[in-house]
Figure 1 (cartoon, rainbow, N blue to C red):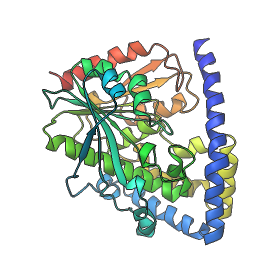
Figure 2 (cartoon, one colour):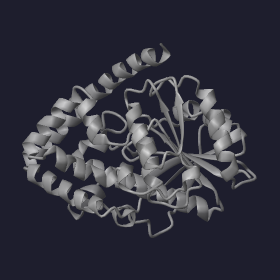
Figure 3 (tube, one colour):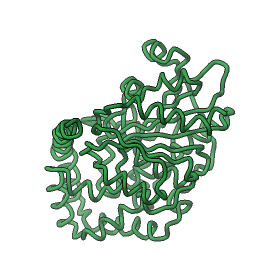
Figure 4 (cartoon, rainbow, N blue to C red):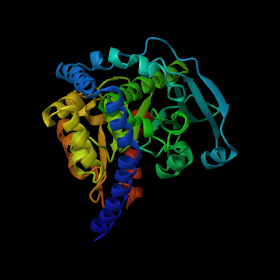
Length: 360
């Protein structure tokens, strides 16, 4: 009963989010394509990412940053410090990301807000300490909301420093006149989505460079939904993570596009106008799919959390990642994407899981 009740709530939320995407993002993508005759370009760009994906080489698909970021820091709000019960800074630095696809570089370099990387850092005064990094979901970039949702004070008081990373086009990284946080993630079409994911990985690796430069030698990563997708991908690209814990992760976006009504209808229209087949779509999207690469984090340091009633990122998404990750540690909870029933159970399990790698 709990699972079914929570699933109903997820279906309502999914329809709302899909409607927002259909009424704001899809028209922009279609209008831009028609005005600039980009249908052919989109098909060619998708082929570029498909060729990269076919090599299954994360080093080539996601080249690492080559310079240490010049980080600026300022104190966060008093409310953030009250929640953390410690020192909280908002950090920022210029992204060193260059679009992977040469055809996208001019467009990507023109972004203003998005090309400043942002994060919130909860740190102990006697640090640096082992650090738990957190990546939020689509549209869910609020530091305060994520601090409460992920129960981050729990981990802070357990001895961790905490860092909440802002994905591209979210929060203060959203470009001017964006109708909502995360709008730019999909407003650039399939090519823009690929580059947003590439930048998400690149900028997070710059965060890891920064943390290690300041003396942090143990870093774990978790994230929810789109953040879970990103964290699973990072685990296949960067070998410096002590542990990775995707929470309610999306794994195959092409499948999600088919299920999210009414946005799926406009996606189908866009594919027909661009003359892109379903196979070509899947091949292109596999560029940033964690199932396309082997994880670099050892099996005993991988953990997946998901809800049986999740209809935003259904349980079969987590199951596919679990199979790909050699059936690593898996925790099911009787709730949905946003209603994490029995969350205390998995917080305790996460704490025990991380302790052996992070605090011993």
